[in-house]
Image (tube, rainbow, N blue to C red; front, side, top):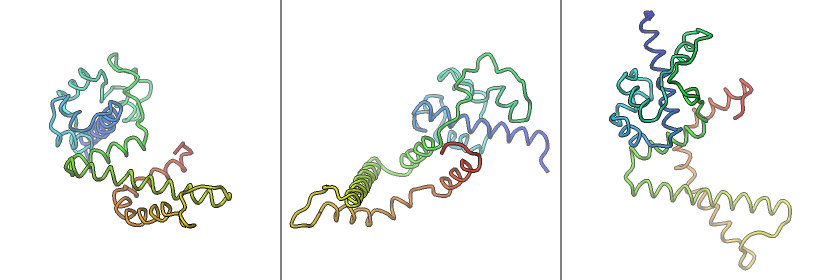
Length: 201
């Protein structure tokens, strides 16, 4: 059974982790850039963002000084322990309570993962693959829409749309590698929660 102190520590870790990620996504910085700006190592920042450790006061002050945002605003901590009517701290700005868009945060997580696990050449290859897959999918879909409405579309030679066939081949070849990178469980959980709560996806 957790003691009140342990419970408070877990609350501080949870609120700090959510706000830290929100602030970083808001700034548009990668983990390496953000950690350098506030004087932390990449590894330490990852642990704070995952809520594995409580954000130290020195890092909190550095974030306030550099970005003018408090990652542990008193009103948010009070709300987390079930207190209402607590006035925001004077130093808090309206951005402390911002909610990060799920898809923006997901994209940032993917970018961070690539930066940590792939060389610059590998990242370039993945971007090229993503562009090729997206282009092929869009052409494939547009061709189907054109066929459904009997509209002229495509690049046919001798009655064969070679671009359409090439797009199909690209989709088949790259499908597994593209899907393997998607955090499907996280996406499904978000969609189910949004539908249940009646929120926008």
